[in-house]
Length: 117
Length: 114
Image (cartoon, rainbow over the protein chains, first blue to last red):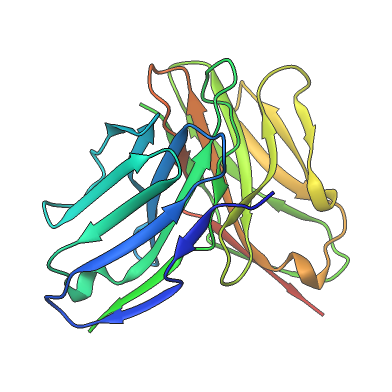
């Protein structure tokens, strides 16, 4: 079974440009998460969706960041305009909720490595 | 609110030696506890998790962890490490707070030396 698929794996862009990161969760999973990992701040939850609906976006740093999930098999994280401090690894992850509950394993993609110069 | 503290940012150890990576948590509700591992240039993957029942949990690659409610700890152990265990290890907690939010610790970098 395919895991969580993210694209692009690496992106280098200039400050001010728009960046779009893409994610395909594991089929059948109804939770999707976007995390950001940096040396300074560690692993931060940016936003998560349940059944394509955003549930908690309190981790989104500012209005320059937006995330969408138009259907169960696709999500995007957009940064517009990008800044050098957005340089990080962005992980998409998914999980299932048989019977509900927060004890489910989260499955991570391999990450999108973003560098803003 | 829940939080996780990993007490060591880096742990160097020689190959075939035992290792313990420490994790403490705080939560006002019943918790579920996890250890994830991140190999270089990869995403995180689950090592083991505690949901309920036996406090000693066994995971992949010979790792185990013990849930200690009185000390609010969930330390990860391996009796004999290999070079291939070099990675970053994350402790995480989630709970019945009405939301589905897993909180990760800052990570512990395990470096196994030959």
